[in-house]
Image 1 (spheres, rainbow, N blue to C red):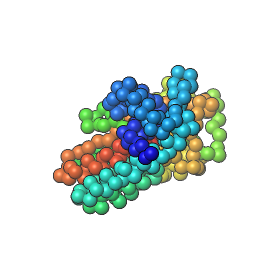
Image 2: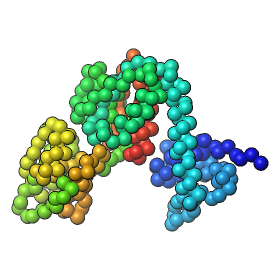
Image 3: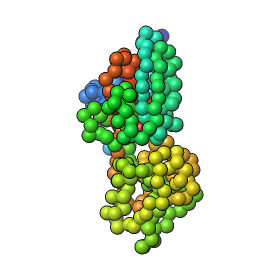
Image 4: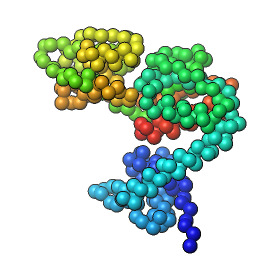
Length: 291
């Protein structure tokens, strides 16, 4: 008796449900009804002959068989997507100028861009790593085609990818000691910076005195200053060096808002190449950062 061919759409839905945190959120993301998604999962269970989910409280979690299928689903879908992108990408050519902040320049994005280069040999991607505001200025001047930016979700060209929590950040081996009347040393970007503005506002609202101990225009310089104990800063946890650590509520620091991560696209005379790169960035952002 021949083995069944697993449903690729169902495998993709399974993977998305784990990235999104639930089948209901997966249904919203892929634009299907909850009943249609449930039917996909039942079909997948019939094909493998094992239950993939078990009830835990009010929700569902994967069984051991479900975890096993999920691990294979990632590999199957990666190979499927690589085949499709390679065939499509072979006929796409041009140059795409892509900008991103330093937060993502050393984490998951380089691998995604490397994958794109392999599957789209005719496309040259020119990378610019700048501050968020600078990237948008260059996009508006026509110097960049696509930028990944935090904090500018109110722009009409913003395409939401993820909501990221801001966090206080300090040196890994240095404790924070808040004492009444003693200013807190801060290491921050030069103004204007929405992270800087959010941190100062949070401290002022909590009536915690502070002073600027270190300012810089470079993210690497900022990380170095914090690691040296010159002050604490705030950012997202994306791309955080091992020499630093997030500081939670136990340190007496006030809560911080979230920040929106968005893609912004400019006009381009290379629409096919731009569209292909944009899709890869979106898929990897959702997979690594959530929605």
